[in-house]
Amino acid sequence: MLAVGMVVQPLFPSIVYLSQTPCILYSISLWQHLQLQLMMITIKMGKIYTLWLFLIGIIVSFSISSSGKVPAIIVFGDSSVDSGNNNFIPTIARSNFEPYGRDFYDGNPTGRFSNGRIPPDFISEAFGLKPTVPAYLDPAYNISDFATGVCFASAGTGFDNATSNVADVIPMWKEVEYYKDYQRKLRAYLGNEKANEILREALYLVSIGTNDFLENYYTLPERRCQFNTVEQYEDFLLGLAENFFREIYDLGARKISLTALPPMGCLPLERAINVMEYHGCVEGYNDVALEFNGKLGGLVTKLNKDLPGFQLVDANAYDILLQIVTQPSRFGFENAMVGCCGTGRFEMGFFCDPQSPFTCTDANKYVFWDAFHPSEKTSHIVSNYLIEKYLVKFR
Image 1 (cartoon, rainbow, N blue to C red):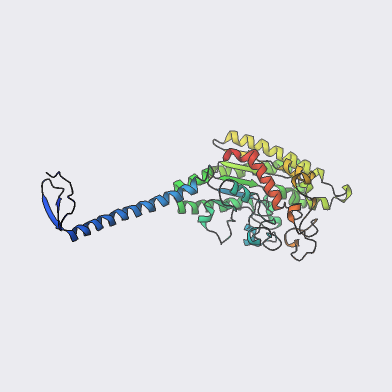
Image 2 (cartoon, rainbow, N blue to C red; image 1 turned 60 degrees about the vertical axis):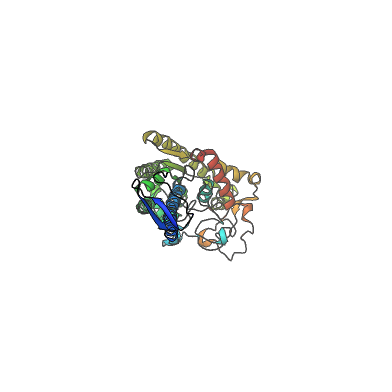
């Protein structure tokens, strides 16, 4: 006796089936049976294909949002972290030409002020993301590229708008406006929920401040006339920094690394003009860097207390950079007084001439690439230090 729904295996051309209606028998030919089986297989394959597409979508979405704890690296600041935005604005503060980038992928001068990669690139790679962070203004990239990392930084800028005017570069308020534009594009691309998750969980890298002192306060008269002491100018910058962090907090940023002043008196350019002290580090500038960094550390503590969920880290690179400059051989360097490019004393930007016979052959032997910026090797060492000491909490 046949049970309802039971299929009789085809022993001869006529197959007996039971319909879904109880106790109703019908018969079909072997050809009809094969057609029916093919139809059922096709339906099943269609369902499998649809399921596969669905799973791919989940995997892609998961990879964007769950590459560890940090789904994206978002960068604000100056030439220490600019990956090429200045290439696309009318300014002389550029480096999208040889010999810059000679040790980058394919020897490509991207606009990074280095012979190769810079800290955001190394940090992005260390967090399991892409090995480079693209510049937001670069038309070669789109929102799909920026979903896992984007750079708004501009070489020559500072907290002070007057600093960005020196070389007509992007001021910090404009970097924030680009960030707002990025948010709109990201939400249109991924939807509000996924985009907001990325913006909330991303690691924000902020590296800025040196130009405010060396290109502005100590070079031009306007701010020195307005602020009688450098301490007063420091406090002015501190207020601008607080406004910046509060604004990006309101826009959704939560995990932020702040790297401020290096031992700026030890930059080759400053040592070159320090003739009276036999080209040693300008200790007065280093003292200012230490003082201002200390004030920023206090601001970090204050903002973390005031803003719920805010994780602002004082990723101070001063000590490690001073160690590298004063003990270069300990880190595998041979020269910490001058940069690799040209004579290494004054050259940076367009003065870093690709035809110069003085440019070194191996930048890995030099702490500095040009008279103002570290070599790729130095950036790698500093990045690893910052990750291990300050940023490991976000991994």
